[in-house]
Image (cartoon, rainbow, N blue to C red; front, side, top):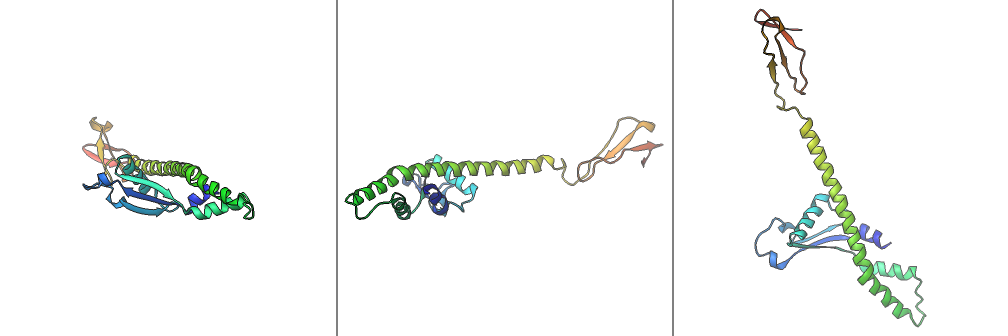
Length: 178
């Protein structure tokens, strides 16, 4: 219930560390930043985490505590007529703020980081695959010939996709395609 509330209505908040904002940094756009946790792109979350690791930013996940505490009270069946209802409500609120919310925040942050890391690896793999599978000289062709002379000599030309055409053989100084 609490984890679901964090995921569905949580907001990623980043703030600048006062001592580090005196000179410009590459994290200026995240100095006073808020975005819904369910909508934040992975590259943006990773940038905020890098800013936090470099000591420029502080990051947290904010969730409205009142609806969660009310649901916890309903789940635990707090009876308003009970002489202990006030103490019970205070204990629920205190346990949420001190114990439950910080623990869930760390768990959700770790899950979000892992998800963002996986997305970054997928993007890298796609880019690398496209780079490695592209023709070595782009769209221009490549010609080559064997060092032999006479009837054994052959020439080849690569196509735009990187494969080679059928060899052509030399006949008295002229090449003919076969």
